[in-house]
Image (cartoon, rainbow, N blue to C red; front, top):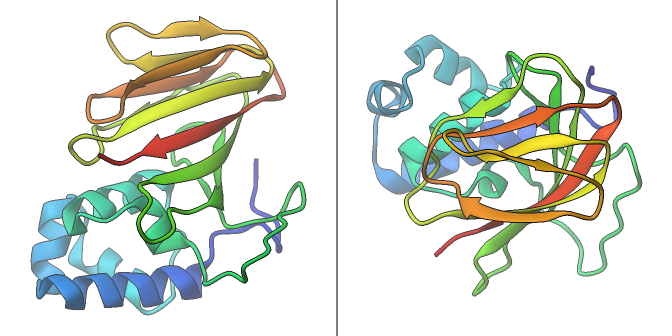
Length: 188
């Protein structure tokens, strides 16, 4: 999968969000980079709107800054929102044919984000633990996939639902071409 002009990572939004969240925490570039396990130069590039961040890099920064993924990748939206298929802020995995498109972020007072996940067979998307207390809900829409905690993933078929802790290592492995589903990340 490759980014399209309308569905690529929103670099300007990511840059603004990272600067805002780092300022909110009062942490230095060096400290945030260290906590996220990335190079200071990488964080500096991202904050200046350069680079091509992977899902893994953004999640690591979110954990380091203790913010939901959506707070870093989503631009401000109007009250009525329609995201056409193939559009929306999309970030791609570094080592798997996996794309994550934010469909709806957590509004004030709520604690959930909604994503469209698209993946192809090949290398699975292995996720490090996210923030403490996060729960992931997945409804598979098409294809077949192995989803869930790394030590006990479950094979899903279209229409199947799984709920599992997102604060432990977990996996999404497409077993058929054209695999996609809707994920809801619930923050407690």
